[in-house]
Length: 497
Image 1: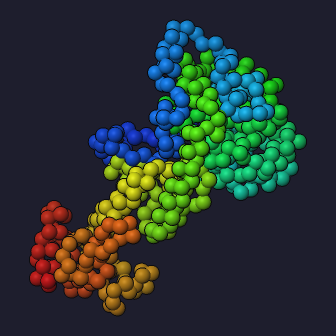
Image 2 (image 1 turned 90 degrees about the horizontal axis):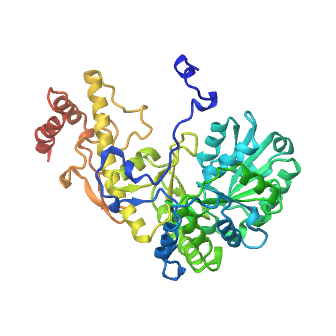
Image 3 (image 1 turned 135 degrees about the vertical axis):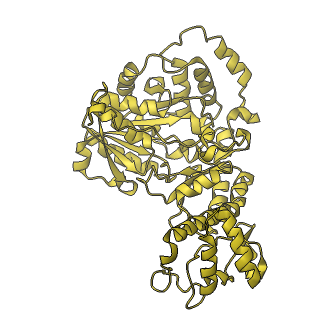
């Protein structure tokens, strides 16, 4: 700890915390783009693609009436027991849970913090899955607990000695960001093992209504002092502006957590809207949620099939309303890819924070087919711009080397010869891309996305040693680089055509 840090009155484990990265931040596009928010396509958030139930004709919900009721309560303190809201949540869960089993929270993050504040001491070990949402281990770090990461596929097979050491275990079902759903029977078995060792198992079911609610263990938590299930209305009902989540656990556990939580953590508007959506007829099997799951299942398969046909995209199997895509074999890393799309008003979730800095994964939420096709239609445009940027970067590297440059030829490039033996590889990336002149041997070809892309496959001009040398001589002249590129094209390339 530095002397500057020592002057702050913070607990030592708070000094290294950094802000949490989240999707859905449309106002924070890269590069200062001025894109109207209405024109932004956001695939970074994992909300119900049908929109909120207030847009669904058969939901039976009247937003005006709900807000009018909320307005009448604005000048009075809420009943901080939130009895009606807890009753609506327990009814939504179904058999096995009553209002006394429910702990209301202002979002899942508040519930995670409440649980750890109430259960874990500084230095206690808390097991979190890998990958998982950053909130799990950030909450641990903010409270001085020690997060211990375990690979997702190993979580349910933890040995007894590990369970004994852990105070709390976090598990998301389905997992975020993989979308993997574990069966109810497997989690029930694991919960029993945790209870035998006195370890609290927290199962985050934030996405289960959009996946398969029959695999929920919320009803089991109502009679287990070592099992707590969290749910959220944000994703299931596409209400990110209404911060309401709730925990389901045994009555003794719920009683203690309700005593420890903030006295008034739910406002009047949130209370009325949350109560209304949880009170819809049919609960998790309401017409609205059933239709949502059917839509997600169909469009998720379409997205997966479409991406699988494109080079460098490996969509992983998902049971949620989003798909994790492995881009390890793609020529662009996840960070560059998402920035390129953000500059065009399309937001995709970059997932390096889920994977300890590895820039191989993106997460794409399920939206309408038309929206997804708009994303795909921009691929060729993104690739072309990326090629131009990379060509410029390589050109600048070449110019910096000067006359003593070393061409990346025999033995130094794994792709040599990509054109012909003895080629000059000074310009691996063409500074004239895309020249649009088919006399070079280049041409427009159909891309896998359905658009057109400029192909240089049959152009070898810049790899002829004498031509490469003349072009480099022009590019190294004093003056503006862009002007020199135009001059090299006119004085060197055009006479050859």
